[in-house]
Structures are given as C-alpha cells and as structure tokens.
Amino acid sequence: DAGITQSPRHKVTETGTPVTLRCHQTENHRYMYWYRQDPGHGLRLIHYSYGVKDTDKGEVSDGYSVSRSKTEDFLLTLESATSSQTSVYFCAIQITGAPAEQFFGPGTRLTVL
Amino acid sequence: GDSVTQMEGPVTLSEEAFLTINCTYTATGYPSLFWYVQYPGEGLQLLLKATKADDKGSNKGFEATYRKETTSFHLEKGSVQVSDSAVYFCALRTGNQFYFGTGTSLTVIP
Image (cartoon, rainbow over the protein chains, first blue to last red):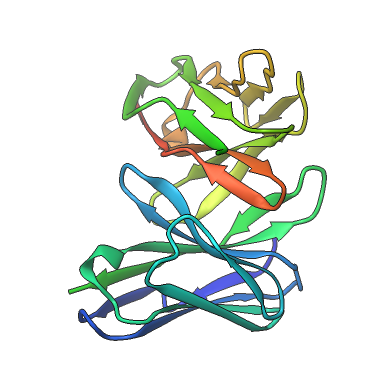
C-alpha cells in the first residue's frame, strides 16, 4: 500500500480562522490531489500538484490555497474558513501504472462553526 | 467537459441478490475508467479499472466492462453480501485529472 496520511483527522474551528490540513506520502509520487466530499456532490477537486512548487486549480478552488515545498507534503489552507467549507477532505496520490490510478488518504473531517 | 454520471441511490438489496450500478461518462479522447468503494469512515479504495474499450475489470466478484459505443462502465455482482454495503463511485481519468460520480450507496440486508 502507498503510505499516505492526513492530519488532523478531525477539526472543529470558528468562522474566519485560518486552517491548514496536511497530506504526507512516503513514496515520492509526483502527483498529489486535494478533494472535498459532500453529500450529493461526490468528490470535487480543489487543487492538485504535479511537483514541488507546481500546483494548479481544480473545480472548487475559491477560498483555498495549497503549497508543496517537499515532494512528500501537500498542504491545503483555508485562508478564512466559512461554514460552506464544512466537509470531509481527502488527499490522493497518483500511482503510475497502466492505467495510472489514485490512492486515497483516510480523510479529514472539518467542521466550521 | 469530462464528467461521470452514475445512478442515484440509495440501493437496498437482500443478500445474494444481483447488483447493477449504472455509470455513463462523457470524455474527449480515450479515458481510463474506475470503480472505487468507500466503507464508512474510510477513504476511497480502488475496486477495479479498465484502460480501453471492451476491457473488463474485475475484483472480489465485481465486474465492469468498458463500453465505448454506449460510453458506459456499469458495475455488476452476481451475489452480494452484507459486507458489500458501502458507497460506490465511478470515475474516469483523462490526462492527470480524475472525475468522479456522485456515488451510489448500497445496503445489503441479511
């Protein structure tokens, strides 16, 4: 199994506060992704990274920023959390192969009060 | 843009019943197709995959065939078990982006 962890696993925060979620992988995969999962919407891509300092926006990037200063870490920051950002956040890595597939972390449940 | 549409749930079946979860896709080019499963409180796990037209992915008794003519990748299992209760997601990959359906919740009752 690809080693991928997320921290924290659960967080409750207040509206307007900044929040950073961390995704860590142990196998030096190039591509990493952040998704949010909400009822009725499935998974929606927030941002992804294709290398150190190389990132791009996904479908629902407003209000989020990311950073990747090391291959193994991909950080997601909510600059000023809002209640609409209450969700479960999943990190994923792309594992090369035929076909390339995604492997997911265990998720972070974020509640914004 | 590229997208995946899967049947609405929830689906409730008795143990040993036949399962079909429909999935259709829209994509330019030739996507790879996947089914993922999510058990309560966990992340998504790859269930099966297919790379090209007429490929059949299979795993744990589940099967899906890549049908280019109907742009479909329906998930089937001949005899479901209580342990198959989960949410199932159809997905496609084009380039380095993945697109997921909204998920279908399956409950299997003894």
